Length: 123
Image (cartoon, rainbow, N blue to C red; front, side, top):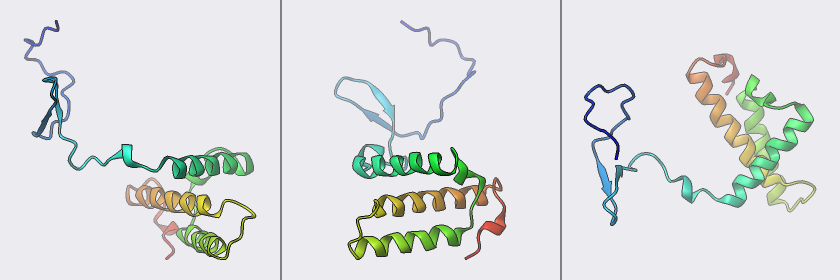
């Protein structure tokens, strides 16, 4: 068994104060507010992942992380969505919608955190 008598808290774990207790008696911190990754749609994630791979081969790995204008993502989202709606099958347009939306979201987060310049927010 582990010795838990040490009162020194070197690496204290974050604690919401709420608990989930399992039938086995095991206890974990609450899931509230942490999201449900187990409900993410696997096919969509795989398609987005493939789009990241294709982009890495075309433009270089993690190229998008250097920062792009919001308007470029938004324009691409609309173009690919319209292409999908019109029935074009020349490429995976829905994965392009997902990819652009994900990168727009992350770029916005980085701009808010000061990791990318505010001038990228051109909308």
